[in-house]
Length: 404
Image 1 (cartoon, rainbow, N blue to C red):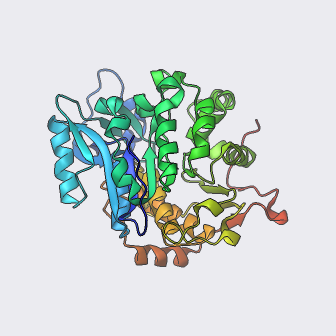
Image 2 (image 1 turned 90 degrees about the vertical axis):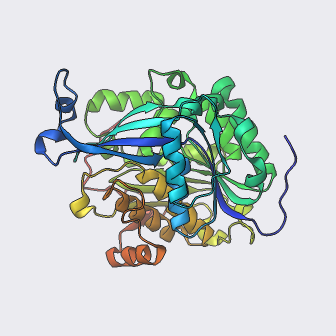
Image 3 (image 1 turned 60 degrees about the horizontal axis):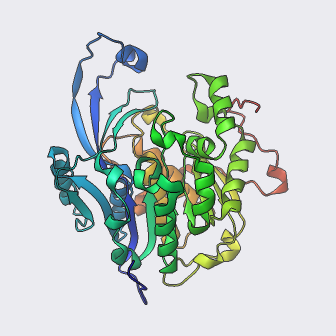
């Protein structure tokens, strides 16, 4: 690898690399009978829909579009094929006026796509074709552009075959090299398919290798439980069956996961718990504080543990949440770049994630930053410091937690 070391002001706020796809979203009719996914997918049944939306998906597009909307300078780094879906992806990137030089086209390759089935009131079902993302490796990573960035955000390793093979050697090489450049590293995740090759990876051991070089780690609650404590995850699934896992995982388990991530080497972890809220835990963040990168208060950020309740969805309850986690992370990273305190950063992430479930297109109702700020203070959602003695036994009494 060439040696890159950027001095002075950085050209990009965030470089986003990794999984890139197009989401194909059938427009299901607003019909109560379509809330039962098992009836929709019943063999031999014909279900009439109102058309199909094709939207950019994956961490590169979702997080990149949101950060640009939040006035941040971004660089996108992904891989597509020269097929029809790839051409659709490039047209949409051009429409959003996003930089294209980091999106490489593989001749004869198949662009990744997701078939997203999202009935009202039911969590999404993804039929995922990783396409040429399975070939995306360090040879496609634009280290020169990343060296000119404040933050490098990467996702999702379980869908990027080259980054989990050989115990994650390429992932380790990439993150450690980028850390040497003086760039802050951030990583998001996806849920490994237990029946696929990535489902057989020892993700807990792999993360022990790479988290010392990952400053910010932003998995969902279900992802964190599956990859860090697969035995407990299996137990939860056996207890709950088809029920919503997020609603019933004990707060003590969430705190254990946060502690595990920080002790493994990450400086900041953000665990997204959907309609329950967002959990933040930090270690010593002093190595991230730099006037050219993040101008954060160490007094406010060091060794924190905070829970932010979800903002009420209101009439949006049960609508499409596809990409909500990605843009919640975008809001969190944007807040860090703005030097916000942990409480405000969590609120921005929570309200932006909440707004996403109200629409299919990622830019619909994705308000500008001032509007989002007004929403936060208008709703004044509860943020709880879990390290305060009076909150040690805190429980959200709207949640019927299971005992593990």
